[in-house]
Structure formats: structure tokens, C-alpha cells
Image 1: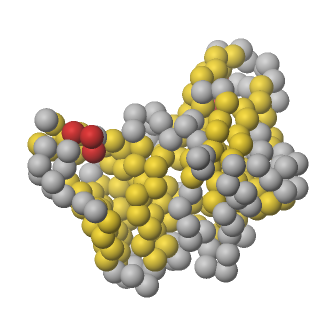
Image 2 (image 1 turned 180 degrees about the vertical axis):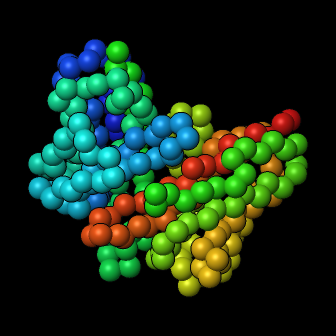
Image 3 (image 1 turned 90 degrees about the horizontal axis):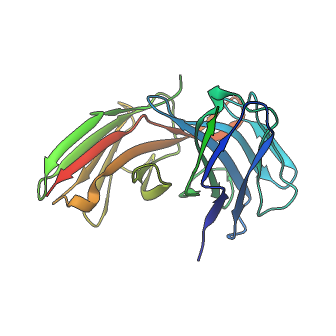
Amino acid sequence: EAQVTQNPRYLITVTGKKLTVTCSQNMNHEYMSWYRQDPGLGLRQIYYSMNVEVTDKGDVPEGYKVSRKEKRNFPLILESPSPNQTSLYFCASIPRVTGEGMNTEAFFGQGTRLTVV
Amino acid sequence: SQQGEEDPQALSIQEGENATMNCSYKTSINNLQWYRQNSGRGLVHLILIRSNEREKHSGRLRVTLDTSKKSSSLLITASRAADTASYFCATDGRTSGTYKYIFGTGTRLKVLA
């Protein structure tokens, strides 16, 4: 089954304790992205990756890191989490970005609800 | 902000009625998509309409696109309780060399049985 898998689904952590949220897709997609969803603000892009070893900042990258060492995996790293990073996080992937833009449906993971206390 | 806006923010209807929600966006687009999100879960793709299309149908869904007004609408006909969810429009924003979907703020639809 084609899917994007995020882990963990729920996480409560303390300020400053490094954590990683994993994202894996089994569709051989080139493009992967992380979003955070906050009430009243919708989904905002954190980082994206056009392919292996190619990553770039989205709208709200501060406090986050990513890596893309393999095509299927795109982990989100919070080196020193703070309470303002409490949010619902989504990973998404599409096959590739073409000259027509991002013209295919995005596949989303089930989300990771992170609470930083 | 580059975000789009959905209207209304919330909608409550009876089962069997039609639900219409609207989306406005700010930049030129290649395509516009609609997604559904069940409470706190991942987004599921519903339909994609390209910038050169004006209307598209998929089952009980009808989407229109007016690029001159930078707006789109999603119509769900003969709604069911299972349609209760949040609905988001997303445009492919290619600005300043970044590649991302720009999501609207969503419409919360509640279908009463």
C-alpha cells in the first residue's frame, strides 16, 4: 500500500530535549516536505526536499533541521524544542516537481502531535 | 501572508443537503487542489483542477475555478454524516524559488444525521 508513515504519532517532551520525528514513504517520491498545523494558522511549510541531499527552508524553519540521506526518509529534527513548537506536524510527498509545478496530489502522513512542556 | 482563505470557516448542514465552500488565493497558480482532514488526522486528496480548467467533477464533488477572481468553490452534493471533516484548498506556490503547497485556513463542515 502506498503510504507516508510518521513516527511517533504522539509525543510529549520537555524543553531542550532533542527529538526526531521520522517520515518514510514507499512510493519512490522525489519531493518531500514537512508542515506544522496550528489553530487559526492553517498548515505552514517548515522544510522541503526536492531529492536526496537537496533540502531548503520553507516558511517557518527556525528551530528545526532536516536531512535527506535516502530517498524514502525525511526526518524532522528539533535540536532544542521549545513550547512554541507544540503543534501537529505532517510529512507529505509527491512524485516530483515538474515544469508545470507541483501538479499531482500530495500524500500525507497521519500526523505527529507534539507537546513541549 | 500567502495563505489562502476559505469561506465559511464553519458550516453545519443536515444530511442530504448540499455543502458549498469557497477558497480565495493570492498568487497565480498552476493548479488548485482540495483536501479533506478528519479530526486531527492526515489530509486526504479529493480533487485537482488545473489553471486552464473551469470545472471538474468527481463523484459527489464539483469544483469550480475562476482564475480571474482567484477563487475556487467545492460543492459536496447529497452530504452524508461521513463527510463531516475540515476541507482545505491548496495551491502550488512557486514564489522566490521555493516549492510548496499554500493551504487555505479550512472550512469545518459538520453534517447532522
